[in-house]
Amino acid sequence: MKVQAKFSEIAMLFVVVALSIAANLSDHYGLGDIISRKTLLILLTGTIFVALYHYLRLMLFFTILILAIGANLPDEIATTLGISPFVMLVSLGLLVTVSLLSYLFKLLPTGIEQPRINTEESRKSVLTAVRKGDLVNLHRLLKYNAEINFTEDGTMPVFIAAENGYADVMQILVHNGVKFRVQNAEGKTPMDIALAKGYTRIAEILNHAAESGISKKV
Image (cartoon, rainbow, N blue to C red; front, side):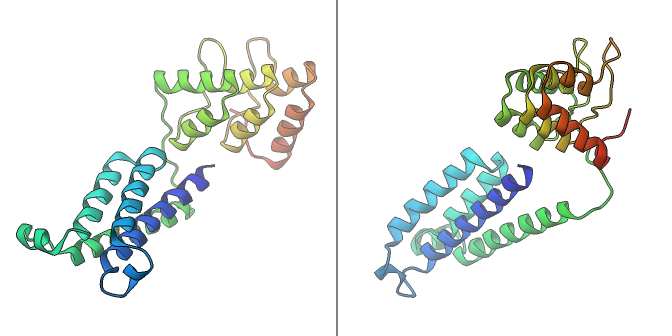
């Protein structure tokens, strides 16, 4: 999920740049005969707001917004303000290039793990998402690197998933490095709980993870 979200962000950046370039050159290369500059600008504005709502961080959104507006200012206004639409357009392209390179760099195995967010608020949010079987919020929290290996109110996310039979939740937790060989106060592991309650799918997920060596014992 995390990779898909990143691809969506990069795709959105490319769409913004493509629309900005098309709007900026529509009057010079005959594009206006196919689609008007006004229509392109409307599409560009709509795309930027969709990007803000779904994908991009606030500061990145404002940067794109400023560059896109600057790249498409009428010649008279641009001259008065001393702004070069070409420079703005190049800057927008560089922003996309840097974002893409940053994404590719994060895919490289550097051996450096980013510290997980482990605050009272993040722990409560994770527990709430797991208790409700809320996959959307759980994915969102993991995207922002929320800690999932913690004890709160005498329990852990992995035990809640096992006790409630949430196979999809358990799959996500295991995929994101949850430690499933831990024991509760009664000396039971998540596997013990799943087997006792007849949650065979969860037992299969944990067994596969154990055989694959995904998680190590604390």
